[in-house]
Length: 340
Image (tube, rainbow, N blue to C red; front, side, top):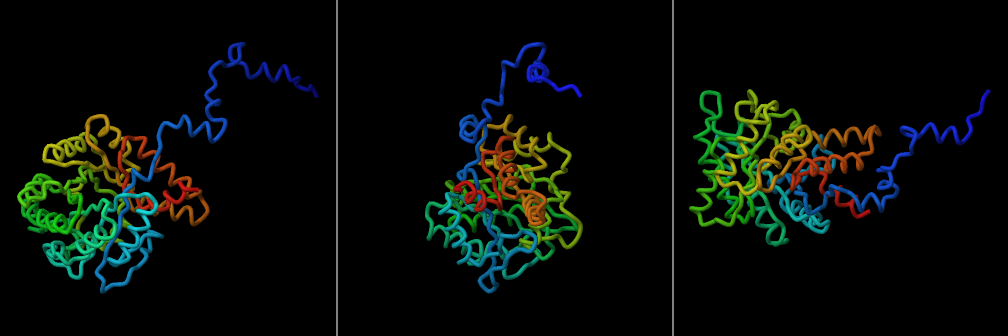
């Protein structure tokens, strides 16, 4: 058998008879070097931590399909916010589960409701925490849709005053931002007008501007107890195939007064985030949604992936696509990993 000499091995790696002069691997040699030249960095400053708040008549309960995520009573929501704040996270997004549900979601503007109570308690305990309140009727209606039902469909214009009433209630409780997620046409303008008339001009609007009718929301519907009792939400949430329409939705929300716009979900819509970043000069948020979280947790639990590494990779991809802010159930876990 012929033995290959070292000179022959070296010759086999040469390109066109000469050795490579550009060696990108030089910048990957160590963790310190990789950190120096890293193009995209996710920080706890970029993260918003979602919390589900239930009435104090109910116990705090871990959500079966979302390990590590809980339905919190108000005092527990405050404790979770304190843990987030101590970890460097400066914003929470609140979703509420009411004492009762009806056809118009009237519990959502109850000043003593779980979200209103949580806003007041968090702002009293952690004054510099940014508190964002999700504005939608789906958690509060007995039919599970995001607006008023007329002839078995959601009536857009009948829904706008109710969303405005809900947003005003959250703002009066002390929310820094209200976040309409319903996808009704004209809701940003309606909410902005209501807040301004109520002399709450300093309260911002973080609009779910490009919210797609996605299969990634399943675990959230368990967490928020908001699955529709009939039909689905495709008549008001966006078709997943449409990116030009997403740009239209975002542009309309900006025209109507949105301070921050959002793409939801994030992971399957990175191209939408990138297109929005290139077209609009406003802060862009992306929602790393429940299904994205649950898939990582389930695969990691089975030992199929390194959950922490995949979490970091996903959040980096969302930031790299152009998001300024990331709403993620991984927020506390990411902060803990970043400290290690």
